Image (cartoon, rainbow, N blue to C red; front, side, top):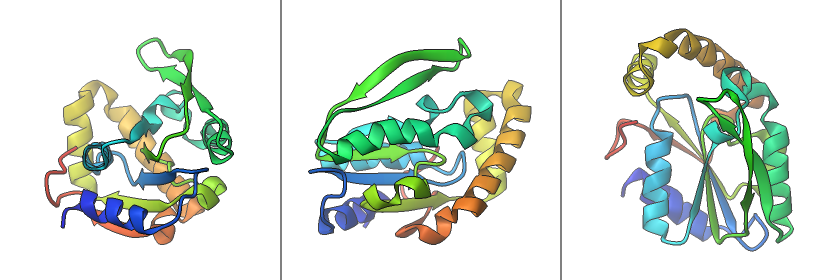
Length: 185
């Protein structure tokens, strides 16, 4: 069974936690394979919305302030209403449009901090994806270029502090190896 099949199977076994829908959070360090896993889950599920945490961060230093965005996205969905968040425009280095997210049978929230403890009561499945540090850094620099190497180094420290404070890995329902299956980014 693939990682995506394991996550989706567990989510389907559990009751809805996000209003009438389910919420899968795919968390773990940058470069571990979260985006690829989220796409595979959505592909298997059919009717699923995927939201990338990268769209919710206020740039490279926004990790610690993302809970407000998650609150405005997830709490209304838990009541059966549309949620929303402001999208960060990375090239423009500024907030862009507000994105409205209607209720959905399955929401896959992927990215660093998606498993925030502030919203743990709404999570159907928290999946933690990990690979060795050297592989994560190589993937990140391959994807984003050497020009962001300093940002990646700072981000790695920020996410390590976040994960320790939030105990994200310890709270995860599944701990997955990002080198398994077709995961590669």
